[in-house]
Every structure is written in C-alpha cells, then in structure tokens.
Length: 304
Ligand SMILES: Nc1ncnc2c1ncn2[C@@H]1O[C@H](COP(=O)(O)OP(=O)(O)OP(=O)(O)O)[C@@H](O)[C@H]1O
Ligand SMILES: [Mg+2]
Image (tube, rainbow, N blue to C red; front, side):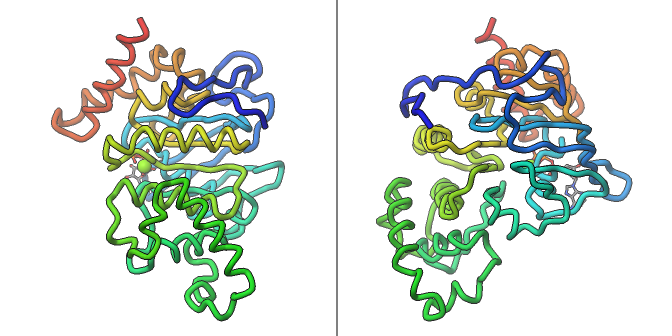
C-alpha cells in the first residue's frame, strides 16, 4: 500500500470511505468488518445495541462517545472476549460470532486493552513473544517453556527486537514489564499486537495514561499502521487526537451508534454534542469526563 503520510506531519486523510449519506450505520465502499444487531445487556442495562455498523478497510476509524457508552463492551464482543445476547458480525467476510478470542486474533483481528494487560512479572521480550502466538493466554504454557518451541524462537525474537526498536523499547527488553511506565506499557501492548501481523488493529484508549512526551510517537505509530496497510479502529476521548489522525468517526451513546462521519463534520453534529454535553450536564463537574467535554468544545471553537 502506498505511503500517504509522513510521521510528525499533517496526515493525509483517506476519503470516499462511505456510500450515500454519512448516517449511523451507513455502508462503506470496502468494509473490513460488518456488525448487525449486536446487543449485550448486563441485568437491566443495555450496554451495546448496535443495529448496523461497517468499519472501512485501510483507514483509521475513531470510536468515540461518553463514559459508559458501550465502546469497550463492543470491542470485547467483536474480539471474542465477551458474548452478545444477539447479533452477528463478519471480519474479512468471515462470520465471527461465537469464535473464541484466540482464534479471532489468529484470523488477523487484534485488540489492545483500556487497562494494559502486559504480564508484569515477565520481561518485555517475553511479553512480545506471547504476542507471536496470538494474545495473552494462548499457548501460555509453551511460551513459558522455550525448549518446547526453540525452532521458531530465533525468528520470533528477531521480529520482537525489530518491533521493540521501532517502539524505542529495545533497551528495556530484559526488564520486567512491571518496571515500565504506563505510557511504555501502552507502547509495549501495541508492539506486541503487531507480532502476529494483524490486518485490523483495535486500540482501546491508546493515549490514556500516556505521558505527553510520548504522545507524538504514539500518534506516529498509529499512523504508521495505516501506512503499512493495516486498518485501525481506536477508542479515544481526546478529540484533538481524533481530529488529527482519524479518517472516519463513529459515535456511540447509550450502546447505540448515534452519528458517523469525517471528524470535522461529526464534531458539529448536534447528536454528538448532545451525547457529550448531556452527560456533562448530568454528572459531577469534577468527574473525569469534564476534560473531554472541554476538548470537544475547544474543537468546535477551532472548527468554526
Ligand atoms: N461486566 C459488566 N457487568 C455489568 N455492567 C457492565 C460490565 N461491563 C460494562 N458494564 C456497563 O456497561 C456500560 C458500558 O460500559 P463500557 O465499559 O463498554 O463503556 P465505555 O464506552 O467503554 O466507557 P469508558 O469511556 O468509560 O471506557 C456501562 O454502563 C458499564 O457500567
Ligand atoms: Mg471503555
């Protein structure tokens, strides 16, 4: 795939991703993932109720929405970490409902977690090696006993080192993951995700807890994934980041998709403003989402 952005410069956005009007559930020209009627309830609470959504291939899509909108639950469902009450979805035209997480990962759909899941008492390098066989949990036994998989080991280690170098973590390769900062753990998780050569990378709040000094490199890494031909779907509250790197934005509120479009248009959509400001209105002014509301207001000001 051709390179269409230079890290650290203004990224060139992918255009013509959708067919017809940019309405919730609109069709895409080349969707990599299509979800239909995906619903998940917890007791009386409907956490996810997505009628139809398509994720465009080869682009960076941001999934935004207020706290509790169902973004992480939707990620969990799509990647086999949770089971829906109803619904179906396809990835690369293959049905994924009922497919367990490790198999989803092997098919090329990899996700990272809002709260990082690096194994604190394994070295950075061993965390990377676990990524080679899918995600944490898969083949853990083999991963912990290298003599069982020595054949592949050298190849995997070379690949891990290359990725760690790219993410500036190579000097930490023998350190315990526990010794890394929150931001470095986010980078490790992203680097580990790439060990299995995914085609769709889903990142749940990749910037949360990351030191501002690492922000630019994290953005460049995400843009780099698209340059290498991968599709990215990321959850993020930082609207500046969304505006900067997303080609397409999908907005969730109360489990549903309430808006879709390019970042600029979506931020001016009354449904989006309602979703954020409505929550702000109902919540404690000191709650953690107030920064996000400020960000979206600032963004709206910028765009006018
Ligand atoms: N395991 C669970 N048991 C009960 N309720 C849950 C569970 N997981 C999520 N929920 C509820 O489902 C709703 C959606 O949660 P979810 O974590 O998906 O939201 P989110 O959009 O990722 O929010 P945030 O931006 O804060 O990460 C929330 O009301 C949450 O409390
Ligand atoms: Mg979440």
